[in-house]
Image (cartoon, rainbow, N blue to C red; front, side, top):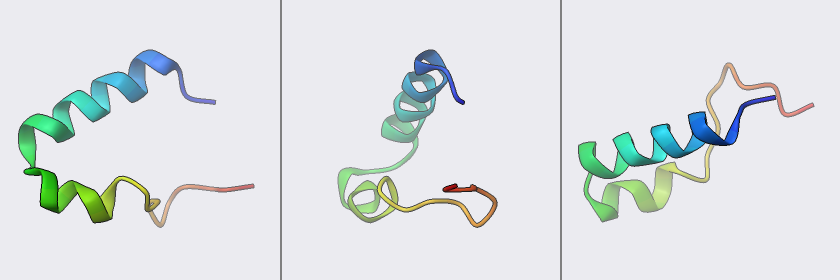
Amino acid sequence: MIEHRNTVNFLSWAHKAFDGCALEKTLFSTSLNFDLA
């Protein structure tokens, strides 16, 4: 389980690193290494 703090840090970095259009399609997808089970 990931901690809330880690998620907030990731989203903060992504917001600074990418523009809004790029984030629209990537925030709701998962990494190939992420286990949904």
